Length: 256
Image (cartoon, rainbow, N blue to C red):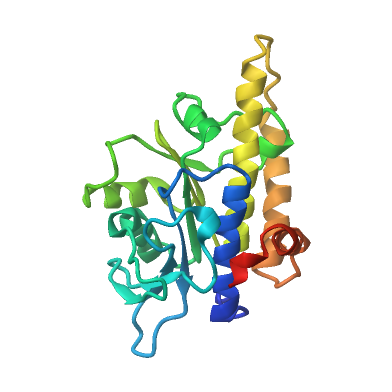
């Protein structure tokens, strides 16, 4: 397997993670100072695991490449330019996923109205359109156990996640994994619009047209092939480049 970080410098990972926080905020997908997006850094000089996380108490639209905090797999601070530390409890799920899934450079967790609504239904996300077909038969589920402070829950989340990159946390929200920060953000944005579309379609009171297995699986495979071309073959990602230009124009401070 190609090293997911071999083509990215630490500065690029910091840039992309700061961009992820800003984009999630721009899309109205943040939840105050709660929820997190984490990114794996290359191992330290002694082989230690290192991750980037937002400073405790900052809104997503205040996160910059320069103020991101470096922590180890337990959430202990290694480097803290801003000086506010991190919400170590909020990193517990992320750390467990990172340590179990070494293919995941980025772990992204949201509590959006649409995401929580869909996660609160037994059927989860239905293949109602091209957006949601991307996730057909590719979503894991984890039952709600209360606010995620119980360290024992981490093993159950990892077990329920398996080898999937998208999870609906029942009655709670969503969890996305990316082989890069860019992939995690794109998955999150597409899942959010899929959830919004489902809430809108079912709210019309008409009869939804659910895509059949063959066409839904074909569409999901098309998306997967495109994503693999960026993550495995190193093809330039024009969608992520466009999102970075969006931030350069609307929120250039994310780099500072």
